[in-house]
Image 1 (cartoon, protein in one colour):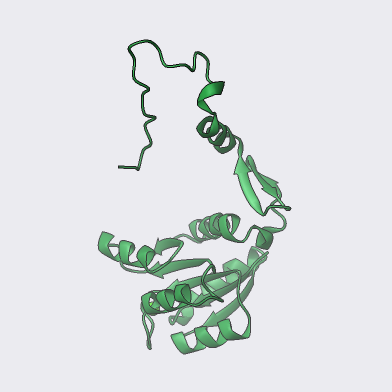
Image 2: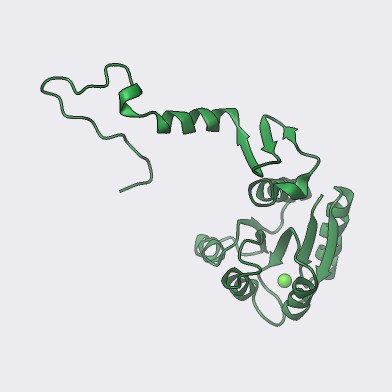
Length: 184
Ligand code: CA
C-alpha cells in the first residue's frame, strides 16, 4: 500500500489517523507542522499527503499552493483535513490544488475510502493489491483505472458521424450539436 504523510498538529488526531492507516497497510509518516512536513517531503516523496488546514506555523493552504507550484510535488496527491465546513473554504482548498477535502469530524472509514479513491486516480501503483475491485480495473501497463460504464461512455463520445446510422444530414435538417454538459 502507499506511503502517506500525515500533516496534523493535534497529536490525538494524528495518532488516530496513523493507527487506522497503518492498520489498512499504509506506511505512515507524521509531521506536526509545516516545517516538519517540508522536511519529510524533501527526504522522501509520499504517495499521498493528508494535510490539516490549521497548522501552527503556516496554513495547509499555503503548503498546498507551494507544493503544486514545485515540479517535484506538482502531481502529489493531497487530501485536506479541516474543521472548516463553509463552501468558500472548500473552494479555496480545492483551488489551492487539493485533490479532495475532508471536514472534521470525519469517520475513519470515509477517510480510508477517500484515500483509496485519490490513490486510484493518481497513484494506482500505490494500491498494488487492488488490481480489480468492485468493477474497477487497473491496467498496470498504462496505470489507468477504468470501469465498464466509463469505457462505454468514452466509446459513445468517439463515434465518428459516418459510423452513425443514417449519418448523412436529412434534407432540410441542420446537424444538431451534441449537448456537452459543463461546456458553454
Ligand atoms: Ca490543526
